[in-house]
Image (spheres, helix red, strand yellow):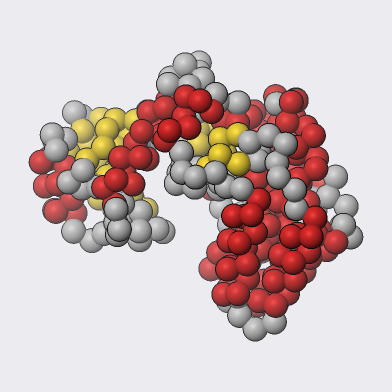
Length: 308
């Protein structure tokens, strides 16, 4: 989205007297984020583009409101998410408060992912423990094991050279052992240090675009896979052991999920690594590291790596 003037006009047409719009995040051209001022307060507007943009923006706003009304949001002593403001059908945008703070980490740099891992794990447990019935009408279709594997197979087919067949082998191995989840929760879908903002040691989750009803193991494992791949990209020797405290803090906050986490962790770790090999632009220019990530996924799927 390059036309800030049009976005301003569209938002104002829907009753939002915004000013000082500027592009805040250009990473997602299909969901650009702009900062603005509304009633003297800083806000952000996530603009949806493409097919059914306005209806997708409306659904995203409904989800934000439902989560804000849960213990994760305004009922918490320190909110774990941004406060929703509204949605604009003309701009196909969702408005929320601008959360101060910096990302907990970035690709290539773990940042505070380990030092603040306990707080991050407890915040994730709060999300997973939100009553599904209060949010379910706002959720996209459930992320079943079958859908997960089909998505991975499509990603594997798009990977270049020898990496693609290697990733396909990982999916084949996962299919032979995959089982439906014992429990399904509201999952973030991209729970990583990049999507946690920290300000004065307080954390808040952002970017709920991939939120689905799914196994809680999906989020726990993706945090771990992200940290492992980030260490690799940073030039360190990656270790699964550094994220075990995160898992234990999560299970202390959500003990009823222990069986599901333990039985699904290998599948979701391997799946997370395949996702990373496909989605990280930093790895696309480093095929040896990209193949290393897929190779680790294969070893996990075979049970050849100790991840516990």
